[in-house]
Image (cartoon, rainbow, N blue to C red; front, top):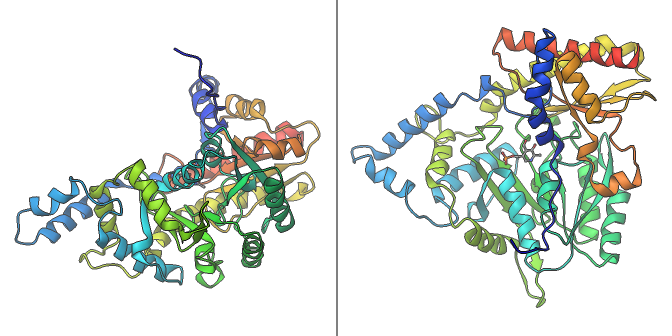
Length: 454
Ligand SMILES: Cc1ncc(COP(=O)(O)O)c(C=O)c1O
């Protein structure tokens, strides 16, 4: 093969862990240890049973057919359609999502995506088209899938911003945008996960959201809001902070995914923006138009059967459009909230006397808590996480790998004192799930205490 200018991208630590897991698990098993899952960010099988989803979808299609042959409904679902997909799905979704997040969505501006990964990819590829140097601003740490996708473009550079428990530092955000431009980069956008941050294990405060918007407005920079966990919320309705797309739709590209509120397999997502963008020829156009052209060239059309299947999910047992998805979310959140409480209660019980050495985030949404270890001899690298599996049967993910390169250059120890713990997944259901999570939390606490000699 000819020599190319291509560069190989590093393999993410989550994939490395997935690859190493069978061997490590076998070592743990040989020692008679049970395997405890605090690593994977997968939706729990107890609340993602596909059988109900499929049965309701099939019944909805029958309902739509009425007295007509079913083929009449199914034919267009297996045919070419417009890139925007079925209008009925977008209209129903716009109404429900707008209701649930206290805003209004224009269904004509919703573009179907392949989950929120598809939305990330579409936003990156749009900015890559110019062939220029592209800068992405993001949090330190940030979602590993975003780092991987952004770095596919060889002229991309990530400028990251440290976070505290309320969100990113606004001074650093402004400084990084300014620096990227001074370095000759086109700043594409600031990418973040404000609710149930993965892997930060926090949700941004309402005030910080407003401050972020102010900085981005002042610096004429778009915000990409990745929102897989906006429905996986542990806050009461009146305490839930507003998403960015409700606060500043003209500044934000919102990425909805059905992966956590529904199922990841059908790969349903929508991107939504009311932003306008200035082109090279100084013409100002709706960003949505550019994204639609991009989608049309990239995927041509999203699977219409999957989209109408999601439409079925948006209807009740009588096939009327639901008013809200919160009742569905609340059923799931009962499970996630129980799991979260088991983990947090165990930490409180086991580590309360050592708060100088250990602390952890109490997430208002999502699947993750970040556990920090202040111990001079314990470094949270892959050696430690491999050891936790092989010697204690506990699967966790080290947080350092979620720090973009520039954050690690600023601070060589970035994230090396933290582990990302997920409380979303176990194999058992009901009482067995609770037992497994309790066992996982206790095994983790025991392992960490032993490693730290307390
Ligand atoms: C922050 C974040 N973005 C995107 C994804 C991928 O979601 P999707 O299945 O919608 O592509 C995940 C999955 O865990 C995630 O945590």
